Amino acid sequence: MKSLRLLAWLAVGSAAAACSGAGDGAPDGEEPEATASPAQTVITGEGPAIRAQAAALFEVVPAVAPELADNPLTDEKVELGKMLYFEPRLSSSWLISCNTCHNLSLGGIDLMETSIGHGWQKGPRNAPTVLNAVFNLAQFWDGRAADLEEQAKGPVQASVEMASDPDRAIATLRSIPEYRDLFAKAFPGEGEPVTFDNMARAIEAFEATLVTPGAPFDRWLAGDDAAMTELQVKGLEVFVSKGCSACHAGVNFGGEGYFSFGVVQAPPEEIRPAGDLGRFSVTNTEADQYVFKSPSLRNIEITAPYFHSGKVWSLEEAVSIMGSAQLGAVLTTDEVTAITAFLETLTGRQPQVEYPVLPPHTADTPLPDVSVPTEAAPH
Image: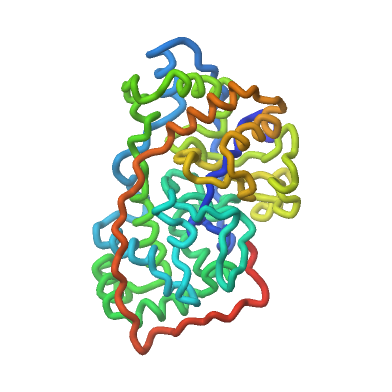
């Protein structure tokens, strides 16, 4: 895997990661196995031939949320999850919610190099978008959370993000009668439905609905020739022939495996900080130094800045950097222009989410704590 010469690391900005890992701040969990990358394929030919070959590599974003293996989606659970996604009182300061770092008005990101958390602390990694995150094989840049449920627990507990803990979060929710009623409806038959696990399951259910169907590329793949321009189709050809699709394939154009950032040539340290060893911090395997989960390229046009460091704001510049880092070659101006034009076709319809009205706190609700931790939790 380390020898692949791939265009692999156009990073999606923000966030949880939600909290898709906004600052990537969750306790380590069991990491899922990486899936094999599709082999490099050169798209040739015209019209139907190009489309047929693209269909073998990519999938359209479905119009409805996918079913979750151990967390059935219900209207009650999704609605509760939406409220919790916007609930700042899950943070100890009452200031930070999932939406703070994964703003659904901004493509699911926060437009920051790295997110700002409790006490104005700066997180170490860029917050990837929560949009379409349900299709990733794991969550966080290093893949330490197996799914969105596990990931949702991390930012609440990270001192650099929400700076709370399970006991405080659940005490807050149980102190508010409306939340007790909503949890009972979302998790019927449970003796005590207001739990930290159920909080995470509800947030996962809502986040699973944050998909972006109808992108120009998806319409083109379905047969609409007018959905993409000649330049964009050319960009698709270059994208695949250069090897980009080996790391960025499937429904999410990424998120399906782990790859080294700097296969051929290490990027400048500003872009790939020496202190962030990526997946190595999860596996303690030497070969995993500077290895990260390939980010989804869906909606990449609107989710700058790029890479886990968030140091690159231009999509064209990010494409060029990947030419040297992953391909060991200088992409021509025409190639960069074409690839960038193609990537712009991956922007889908943004979720239309009505901002919820949250229930008032009570005298039993833990009050805000704005003290700054002496040490930020590892992210």
